[in-house]
Image 1 (cartoon, rainbow, N blue to C red):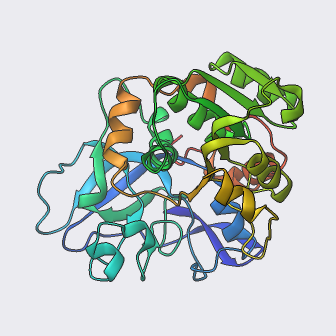
Image 2 (cartoon, rainbow, N blue to C red):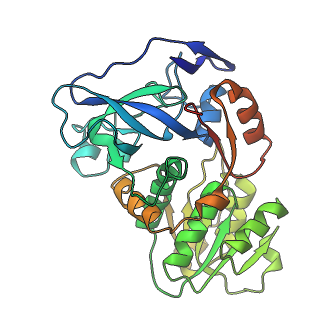
Image 3 (cartoon, one colour):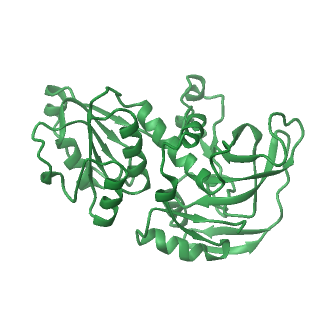
Length: 332
């Protein structure tokens, strides 16, 4: 089969590799489409510590089950599936308390084992979720990032009538926007330096958009402020915009060495809650159902597709900030 192989950080190519075969409890999926994520870029650049090399990337994907390993039940050949990439050990303290995303031996398809930037991929059958009839294989690639956003909302207060401020109108910011609207937000304001993205945000339900929060007339602040950029200036600004008694969420991925300044006295005196949200846990199945209900505008979110052999072009488009969700379609 053909696959994108990252040999070492900064070195990748499309190669012919051995076809996968399923072990016990596993299935082989013929990959229909796979989204490019910021994590994939970090893996290409050698900035994602858990990744061994060489590796086939790709963790946001859908496809059709084409082969079953021994002992597989509940999944059949021909099933159209989205795949939860999470690989938790099931034995450590965090897995035992239901927080597998913090697993001491955390792994993920496409991040620590070979993924879906290929014609076929082997995955645990238990990680496969059948797609609703209303969701096609292209749209289904949004389920994995949506499951991350769903987990983000799991750790936020969800009081009806709250006012939200979101930094970053990329894929994840736009998903958080759509979930906030669906969760009964009184208003959602969005900040991004890219004015084209802000117009998309407005079309998806944002009440106000701007390149800086000073443009909004809300001196009292916002009950919920979410950073989807990972950029220190946005994080510091966002922390200063939280209303007394409100919540700041760090959703965007900042560099591991980044430092942000804040006022500990204000956190104390204004009773501000600061929460993080990392990856997926107990949220993939709910994301499947939300996609089936049309909570996410897939047509607006997916803007570019490339063949497997065009991985370099897709990566360049992602780095340049073109469009929104960029896909590779190995089955095209």
